[in-house]
Image (cartoon, rainbow, N blue to C red):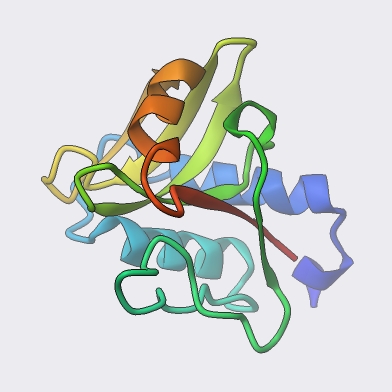
Length: 147
């Protein structure tokens, strides 16, 4: 499989490139379903993102029995481009996004349904905004890389 022979940075870039193909488009999908589709397309169908855990732990995913989806905890400012963030806001709403940019003070995501319209957009939050919105909630967020 071509996906399996890629270096991690190449997989990360393939995910970003696939996500940008949908930028600005109405895709008719919630955030998690869109990310599942993007990773499946980027990997040539080799990887499928697992389902969320049931509430109240729905801010992270069930274990991937195949070991392709690896979750961990790290400060948002260190999450590499091409990694996925599964988060849960203080309001209790879970959300899934792909990191497409980092600066010393901001993180940029691409995702579907950020505006509750099932469209894909790119948007930027400061690290402080992200920490305020997601780190204060139990669990907050989990980051994933795709093997």
